[in-house]
Image (cartoon, rainbow, N blue to C red; front, side, top):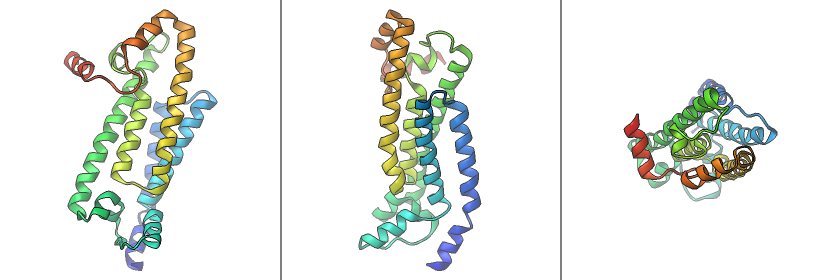
Length: 213
């Protein structure tokens, strides 16, 4: 057990590297401006630190589970894929869990980047085309998908607790932003809001967008 944990400790440089990379992506492509934006970004930043500190640092969740529950979890790195570890599916299950989780993460990142591109180049007008023809808040949906993917891939107690808080924070932020957009664009935004979902796209709209591209 001690030897396994010493091997895990050697991964700390990866934790620092991943925290830096993920934090840069967050602040560059989400670009918080108001204090409410910073609150949401701060929650995601905390999620990132909690995730990679356990993934490549100290396996707090495994220590906690083995101390309070009558279960044994081998202290090796792939045990951090807790869903399959607890179900006893081993390394093959861990690979499958990671693939499913990262499918959500990559999809979320693509939505964040696509939303950022639209805002960066065309943010001076009401955005209703491209990714914004499918959902009204693609970047926030991207954050939700990336967070969910990481909870599938590498669940920990702190990140499981932070996940719902992040969703609530961005739902509240989206509603406040929409109130400001209604004041700015009036009936045009109200009509857009009636036609396009807030976070979860309709399947027909996705097919149409893919066909155009």
